[in-house]
Length: 469
Image (cartoon, rainbow, N blue to C red):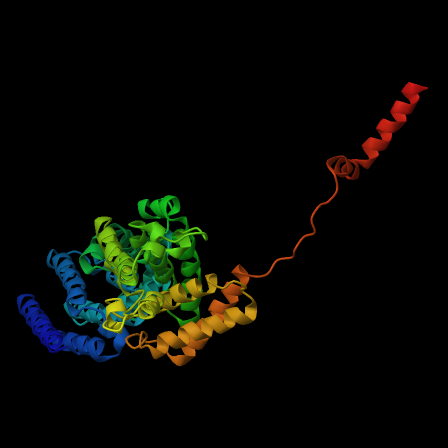
């Protein structure tokens, strides 16, 4: 903890030095870096949602914008050539946080106003278009959404320029070409966002909704292997994904991230799929001939194998978090009980030896996948999954995880857990609902044919009578 605080302080000092250095080189008023540092302090100490974002990443985006803007202005080009909406849209798509994008939009619009001779109207124009484009790309899942947002932002910039030009005290300064430039500017900004998005995803070690949808393709090699080698685990992952997505929607978390994370959370079971219950036949189990300690090692090893397999296939670190955290440091209870039953007088079984290494889930999404994973497995083990029993199992599993401390490091509240339990109960009742028992067909084949084609049979009999006569 102390090391992390020291690292954060070093980062803040570096960011401060860079801001003042850039201001000195560009001969800007020092009020700009002071203003930016105030925004960075707001981000850092606002709440947990904003503290998770790296100041260096945001500063890197801002410096890119500063260098681009200064290059355009220093060459005597029109300030309308600056692709302003690029930074707000890219921030929103990368981090999926509108408040963070608002802070970045304020910083960039103030910088624009300062290099344009303290032109407040120009700063307001770009601030409005940047904020509006950020709203349009929030939770974007398709590239066409970004293109549409850029086009609308360009039209908005042209409309705002018209009003700024008409109500500006002094002669008209905007020409027809200026309106065309700002319209193309917005569209060009969206095209740039789409082009550089994979680069920034790699640099910032994050994942966007667009990339997540690409990972949802069932032709992905890992998912294809699961279908062929571990069909039970594959079906389990699909159900957990659907449960997690619905639960995240109910509590305001990233539903798409949770669903895709659930698809890949058990890929480590591809190493030894036959040792997991969902891939075993009911008649025999591979663990029957193993000691509880050895079985525990095989079961717990699927987390380590999953991490190695994910890194080998270059999965995003945000998805690897689901593999690492989907069990937290919970107890492998079944084999722990078996070990206690086989315990001899001179032996001692420690509970810590039967716990996963962790860490515990630190986001809402990973915590919900942990709950959905445990609840689905417990429900599938029911011999008679009646609605009352399903409800009982869901509440019992969630309560046990809460009491065991598996949810201590995430932001889920008791109200959220109640919403999640209701979602889980509804989905599981839909999956394991009872079906009507159809009566057996005891009629013979000839009688079935007669029942099926009575008119044809009667016509045939009449024809036979005429032939005989």
